[in-house]
Each structure stands twice: as C-alpha cells, then as structure tokens.
Amino acid sequence: MGESFGKYLRRKRKKKNMSQRALASEAEVNFTYLSKVENDVPGFSTVSESTLKKMADALDVDADEMITRAGKVPSDVKQMLVDDFSLIKKLRNRTGQSDQTGSKQANDESAGDQHE
Image 1 (tube, one colour):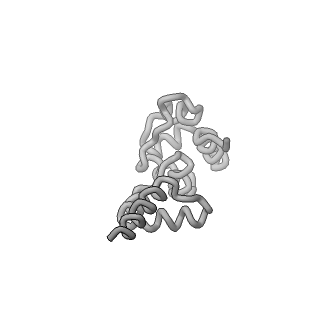
Image 2: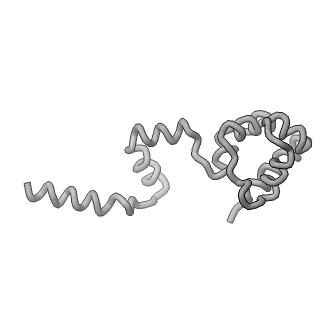
Image 3: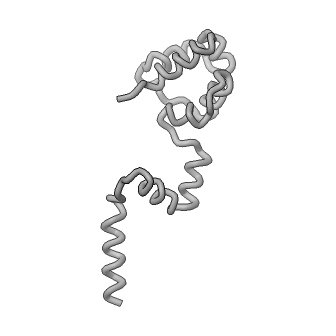
C-alpha cells in the first residue's frame, strides 16, 4: 500500500516549511483537526473537496492531485463520467481492465438482439 493521505499531507506541508496552524488557517479548519488528518486518526480521513482545494492552494500543490490522494474523484470529473458513460470504458481499456460488471449485461443484450 502507498503513502497514506495524512503522511502525504504532512510531507507537502513540511516541504513548504509551513506549520500546522498556518496551513489550518489557510484551509479554514482547526489545527487540531489538521493534526488528526495528518496522523491518520480514524474518523478524520474524510476531508471536503473545498478544504482540499484550499490546502492545495496553500501548499502550491495541484488540486486534482490533492483530491485524488485523499481518495476522492474531483467533482467536475465525476460529473463528466456521469454525463458520458463511454469515458469509463475508455479508462478501463487504457488500463487494461475488463468491464466485469457490464460484460454479462452486454452479453445478455447481444443475445436479445439475436432473438429479434
């Protein structure tokens, strides 16, 4: 397993020579909350997208990287996937993953086409 989000956040904050209090102020959160996020305290791993964007801005980090490192999909990307389902198939094809959930449905649909 890769680096946790908390460790990633701490590494980026220290690289910027920023205190927890300073980052917390920039992100408009309490510094004790930020400390718990950095220490991977259970129950404090879900950070809102708006807070992640503020942290990214304060740390000069790409917002999409910050959001995805937190285990989220940026909301605009999520909307693109909802609006254009074919993008999911393109991503799976690009990574070599098969569409296990849709393959049975596709087979059922093609079998239905043969009966018409």
